[in-house]
Each structure stands twice: as C-alpha cells, then as structure tokens.
Length: 361
Ligand SMILES: Cc1cc2nc3c(=O)[nH]c(=O)nc-3n(C[C@H](O)[C@H](O)[C@H](O)COP(=O)(O)O)c2cc1C
Image (cartoon, rainbow, N blue to C red; front, side):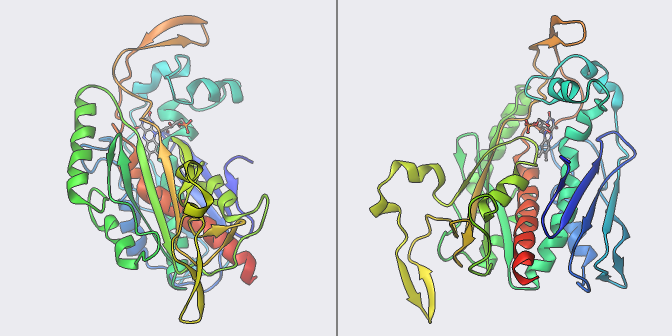
C-alpha cells in the first residue's frame, strides 16, 4: 500500500491532480483534541499555488472540507477524512504526457508500474498537488503537538547556491521556528531571500528551474521517544519526507558534513543544565540510536529542480518507441522549494506524533 503510512496514526492519501478532488483519511488520532480550522487554513495557504510568480499560476482555493472524525470543534478519535476540491485543471496541456516521458518526472515509470492504466493528467497521483492533503494532515498533527509544547518550523535553507542562515542547533526558540512561516518567502535572512528570489526569477525567464534545501527544526519533543534499527525517528521521518515529490536527499544534524570531521569535533559533550541532561553542541540533530535526546531535532531535505521546464528537451515516446523532442506547456513551479516548506513541516509533525503516541499508548 504505497499511499498509506503510519504505526499509531494511519494516514492514507488519495486522488489525482486533475480528478474531482484529493484528500486524506487520518485514523488513530487522539480523541477530544480541539482543532482551530483558521490556523489549519492559514498553514495550508503557505503551500497553496498561484500566490506569486515563484509558484505555478494554477489557482486553487485549497479549502479543506472535513467530512468525518470532527464534531463540535474536536476530534472524535474515529477516522478523520479531509477532502480538497480540484477546480483549476487544464488537462489539455498534458495530452502528450500519456506517451511522451517528461525527463525527471514519473510519466514513464508510472506507466510501467500501472501498465498504462494510471491517470497521466497533471502528473496524476504523482503530482506535487498531492502534498495538499499531506499538509492538511500535518497541520492537524502540528496543532496536537503544539498543545503538548512541541513546536515544528521550517525555512528555505538554500536555493541553488544561495544560502539562508541556519537554525540555531542548540538554542533554537519557538520564535525562530515561527518567523519564516509568517513571511511570503520563508527565510530567516531577508537579504539571502532576495538573492534566492532573483535566482528563481532568472530561471523562470530562462525557461529553466532550480532546486534547493528545506531545513526543519523541532523543540519541546521529549527525550526517549523512538526505537532502534528499523523504527527509529530518522527512519520514520525519512519515510514520510521521501513521500514529498522531488525530495532526493535528507540529512539529520550535521549530516554529510559530519563525515568530513573527527569524532573529537563531532561528538556532542553531555552536560547538566538545571537538573536536565543536554549537550553543548548538537551535531546529532536531536536523535541518537533512533531515539530523541531532548535536544532540538534538526533535519534538511534536498529538493531537485522542477522537472517540467518549457525548454525543448530530448526524450522518448514510450508507446511508439521513438525518440522525440518535448516542449512542456502548462503551469509549473520554477522552484518547488518555497511551497515545499510547509510540506516538510507537515511530514515532520506527523512522523513525530506517530512515534510519540506509541510511547504514551
Ligand atoms: C510543492 C510541490 C510542487 C511541485 N510542482 C511541480 C510542477 O509544477 N511541475 C513539475 O514538473 N513537478 C513539480 N513537482 C515535483 C514532481 O511532482 C516530482 O518531481 C515528480 O512527481 C517525480 O517524483 P520524484 O522527483 O520524487 O522522483 C512539485 C513538487 C512539490 C513538492
């Protein structure tokens, strides 16, 4: 079951980009949790397309309709179903895609996997649009975690070679985590954000696209949650974050950089602070042996450049088995990273809530 996930919370995402609707069913949520629907909508708004020239001009309201599992402002504990209508579909733009493979997209592999029965319009079930239900589910998880003092936030860490400032790995605060999400372009350093926006704009003008990295941080998550070997926090976080299309890498704490250093530089010394065990640095990113250490959890997800670019590209018609050229029409994000920021927050919140519920169940 490729589109279902979770141990304690069962998450199931359905729909296609140009079908009537997309949505999610969340089973196993704690009962009696108040949900603020205005907060949920403004979280989903951060991912919504068509808001500026850095995202696809596709216009969708992305209003979540909760069909079940929510009564008198609180979760009931029974399956919570959310549906989001698709309205602004231009399926004619994708007429070619049923047999001409977009380089770097899933048209060819999806055709192989489902023997041609898949819905190719707008990328079908493989579309970035399917992150809307993920963000709805994650927005609910974020509220449940926030009530328990756990704060999740993310920002654009880089676009191409332009870098933002990193989160403070030791002294990370709720204000620092919340600040990027309040901006239209979610960065910590406004100047860095301007350079990134210029780069995205120049790619758009050149009929090209660019990739980047999202950094996510979490504070207030209790120490001692998670399991070793195959069910650690890193495993679960990676499994959900790789469910976001265009993610090609993930690192925790110092990540790949740690491999270029010595143990004496990367080991985080333990110390006592007000009777609590902390570390003086946080190269481990808040996770040791798959289990939370009580330090801020820090991860970075790498996104490739958007596959659909309007420059002519070499490809193959896989039904005719002929080489051909493709000039992609339609509406696409020149860089998926700004809209991916709430997606990474959502996936992180869901993975951590799932792990935590296992401990308290
Ligand atoms: C928020 C978001 C928006 C996206 N928008 C587009 C888009 O406009 N055009 C496109 O070709 N790919 C877009 N993608 C990426 C593709 O969906 C993805 O690259 C494709 O499904 C292949 O999957 P893979 O890159 O994970 O292998 C988007 C991804 C995300 C997360």
